[in-house]
Length: 215
Image 1 (cartoon, rainbow, N blue to C red):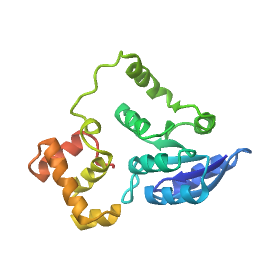
Image 2 (tube, rainbow, N blue to C red; image 1 turned 120 degrees about the vertical axis):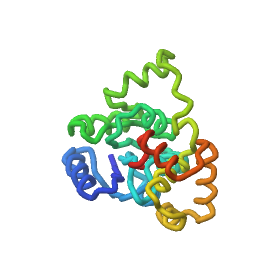
Image 3 (spheres, one colour; image 1 turned 60 degrees about the vertical axis):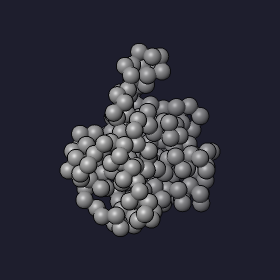
């Protein structure tokens, strides 16, 4: 199995690479520090598996990259590596094309098993999250709160919102995400409109409440 690892921490990339390369049937062929670099590595190497972190500041996040890579390189199966055990994140990344979701604090054996499961064409969900997913599909789960950011905002808006909340200016955000200043301005206006917010403090409060600042 050819594998690419995308994570903004070099020590994390090295650690996972060491675990994976110890397996006789697996090889890490490239690594990336953000979503844009992950896309580039997938385009160049066409790996079987991409291990993708969700949060990779200040570059493009795994949320954005997952959707792009799944659309353009569907043969590469994406396994999300994250510290978030929130079911909202789980549902969102699966809808964006990810084939699995494993927590970073999982044992090494679970990571290897998750890679094998996804490579076989199956879906891997961390056991802690499986119950929520089952309830969602069999209709036992209560209706998702319509006020959650994942129900209201687009993936790009979810990526820009925490940067605005942290105080980055339009030009800084445009350089981080490789988009135009006009796109940032338009997206900010759309976010405020959708969330019915008037001021930056209100937006900061919303980002804190919804646990979005790590994005």
